[in-house]
Length: 97
Image 1 (cartoon, rainbow, N blue to C red):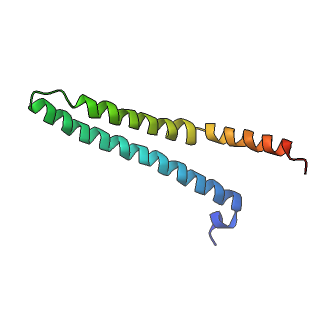
Image 2 (tube, one colour; image 1 turned 60 degrees about the vertical axis):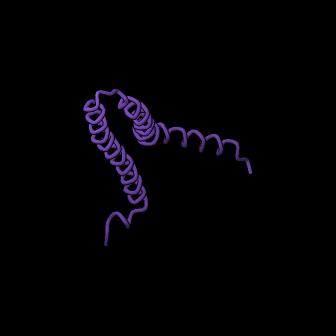
């Protein structure tokens, strides 16, 4: 019998760990594609003597920054868990029925 499946708390930890690891892997893939595509755009822009490549760099860079902030600081950094726990306590304290 699978040890993880036999222990519900362990199973929950495994599920959460996999979800968080998947979110971080998604950010790594996003960053990798960002670098590859923007290197190509910078090369293309420079080959034509232009400087338009900075616009996709900045726009997509902002998206990558926001994605990273959510993955590393909100969802994966414990901040989200602390907020959820605080809300659970607040709801439990107000529940007198």
